[in-house]
Length: 257
Ligand SMILES: NC(=O)c1ccc[n+]([C@@H]2O[C@H](COP(=O)([O-])OP(=O)(O)OC[C@H]3O[C@@H](n4cnc5c(N)ncnc54)[C@H](OP(=O)(O)O)[C@@H]3O)[C@@H](O)[C@H]2O)c1
Image (cartoon, rainbow, N blue to C red; front, side, top):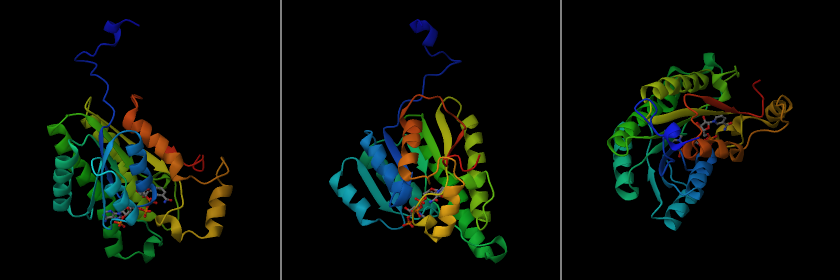
């Protein structure tokens, strides 16, 4: 193919460049910490926060002070989020990618979940990630003007799982927002979701061995998902020119098919 055939025009904007500085919510443990390590291993700088900065994250920040910025921030605190983005970008440079990973779980039937708990799950898992995406976009549009967003959602947004009504609603809400954001950000931001099946973490520790072996039995690949299965997919969404946009990529060993 000749150069002219691939040259960007007004109708075909250039590919979104690979991420150079990634904001990851909830990078203190579990999948978020794996995503922090993976982004760093791929040459990006990383800004990450959680309510509690774990010793693992503290050690990483001490080891790579030029590449890692960490903070103790509650994602529901909009002002603190704005301050964090300002401080992180002052230290690391412009942020051009966001992984909306932080969330809280649920393990209660809807009729037994208090209104306060429903509100807390919605605020943490839906309202706050939307506001984080907004704050990130306002920052990134004023800087490089282009970038990438990955929402970490769940198979729960696609299939019914008892005890996860509000949690599922928040993940489905994020998937829907993701698609519309991908349209709104036409040519400037790639926006996608990864939807993992159950994997071992603090969040899923409420599942007993019996539930885990039932999920494994029902999974066509024969094994549960691990964070290491998810990181390569997120890596591709952050760094590759795949032109994937507005998609939910389910990573669950085929459990939801
Ligand atoms: N584990 C699974 O089976 C599973 C399956 C599908 C999807 N997911 C999704 O994968 C993502 C990661 O889950 P995980 O299993 O790795 O969970 P996890 O081990 O419980 O980690 C959650 C992270 O989010 C942070 N976080 C929670 N509430 C926060 C708040 N209010 N403000 C700031 N940070 C907050 C936590 O730190 P602090 O508590 O210190 O704030 C932690 O860093 C989540 O979006 C989850 O919904 C998980």
